Image (cartoon, rainbow, N blue to C red; front, top):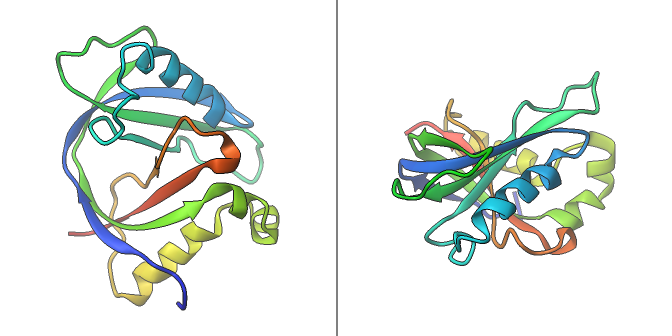
Length: 163
């Protein structure tokens, strides 16, 4: 796969604050919930210490325009959850990871035709080509900076693989 770069990365177990939204474009609504809680208490000021992850929950289906999206924010146990914020324990896992410029991909013919980011497909193909076995833990998207406008959004895509 010429020009495609991926790496293997392991995420440690962590406690996360979780928010969820459902609709035709739930990412923005879920982010508003997370930002309203985490922003004022400073958790978004250091995304290395408090990384943000997101994923479809549930995934889109061919017969409905609505789907869900969930955001996680790594937190310490002494932080108090806010209203509508759920605490979850994430067990961690091993991943194949690549970088995705969301705006470029959403404006590609592939995205309009297929309905998902080409980088996810390329990453899955890279896993197969490298004889890695897909894992059963949660696939994740990690924004480099979750506060940027959509046209500047860059994600690390985390495709689960077995240890």
